Image (cartoon, rainbow, N blue to C red):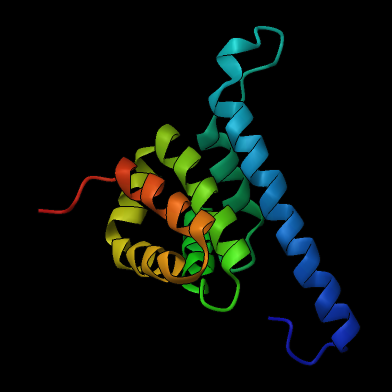
Length: 137
């Protein structure tokens, strides 16, 4: 929580969070496509998820945090877009991410609808994410 901090610090933290999402998205993309680079040491996505859990204050999983950001699409569409992109890569690599998105599919669907109205890239990223996750039966 960032309530109670001076506004200049809150603005800085929000920018840093957005940059962290960008770095995470690019890192996950590289990890998924690392087979093309034989000299890069292989780090599993599962290891990244476990590392994130280890340092999370309330043990919230990375997938949960990313889904929460997608849920804020109306006020922070760019963060939601980056979060959807991160989840795409996580879904390609782990069943845990697929199950998390499947469970909270309605969040991604709502963000996609919001994106259709006002943020085409968000709509696209959410569509791509939903395509990776089977519809629950």
